[in-house]
Length: 186
Image (cartoon, rainbow, N blue to C red; front, side, top):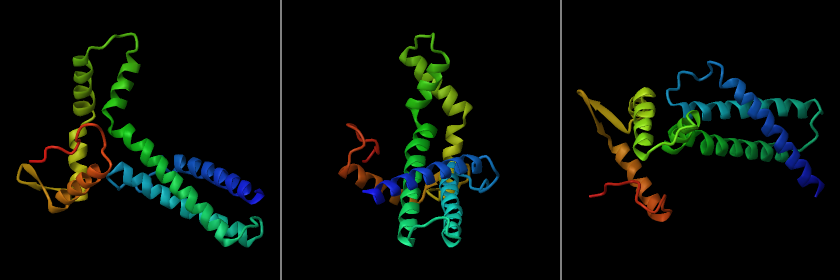
């Protein structure tokens, strides 16, 4: 039981250190050329884990850290997976959620009672137009090669179609909501 407790404490300490380091690294120009913010975060997490893994190996070599190679590997894999889970589960909905944007907007105007139409108009004006959500998504999908630019327009690529087919398969197995999200399917 002592080993399990030590492993847990080691994971928590390493996780906190990696979170602090990630918070610092995200404010630097490291990987700033990566156009998709989510990918930049993932790259930073990988870089972060590699950096702290090297530090952990050095601590083991100079006999400050007295654990086996298997314990080092399992600790770093656990922390890496936990960090990826957190940045995926937290970052993506904050960046892309109609609900989160609308709640934040309502928080800024918490003395007001909103109609359904005002909530919708606020989202369209604030998120879609002011934050240029459509332009950001187009650039993201061009970068990922899910769409291609044709003259003044855009067309889905075979890669984009494959992605949607994969998501539709996922949705058949594990429905996202009570309504089909990946519509229309003619």
